Image (cartoon, rainbow, N blue to C red; front, side):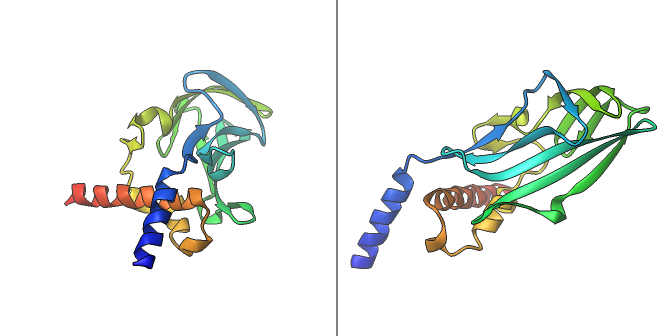
Length: 185
């Protein structure tokens, strides 16, 4: 009986906690932006309400050569010692801007207005946040909460070594994954 009671109290405390995880981005859709070579064009991901970044995605401008635009995609995930780059998720992207002025990477669409060896001017047309149909519900691609990168990393950790925010995130993703699996049947 004591075990069940302590698990119940822990669950009530865990679910009732006010700490939350939210999506963030450092750019605005539909607004012209300028980035210099080597700087970030756009960053998005997940943060806790204390400001700690849990997951980060980034597109970084690499310059232009003979009308070929170079952009680097990088992905980072939180560890106990800070953000860790995920090398398997780094990609060097190349776009021929003679053929198109709108480039696409995954679910991000960007209109290139001007690019040279020192900077790029562009407008983000669509991004993961702008393609959402509601809180926590994604409509782009084939989003599968069971394959969420942060969820997969966190569920490998021992429950008692997770922070309260991480437990809450895993708990929510497990529910989303269960619902997703039921809907797919």
